[in-house]
Length: 152
Image (cartoon, rainbow, N blue to C red):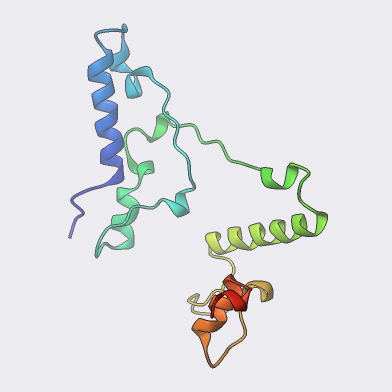
């Protein structure tokens, strides 16, 4: 089943609308993407893939923005440095811990950190996993809210 709605349609509709609105006010604006205005989008593609109910992988890829006629007009800027680590308020230990987690998260996003040959299970770092328990819900509550006296 072909998807009825695609994220690229939203940007293409915005493009056409801005071209229609701005052509009267500015010369040659109908020939420029988004009527010549700068449009800023944020996020990473692995995190913003469109959701296509019952769609195949091909349906999802086809619905993404980089398959739109607008894609050649986008300029991609990548963040290279975690600014939270540069503000001087984080200890060296915390900086290392955050940097390690960031690296792990990127590996998960790239599909290169699986724990099995079928690539179905992700290997969790020791410090983010919990020991098994007879009462797992209570263990999660205690881990998130470490003051047990307030939970009673």
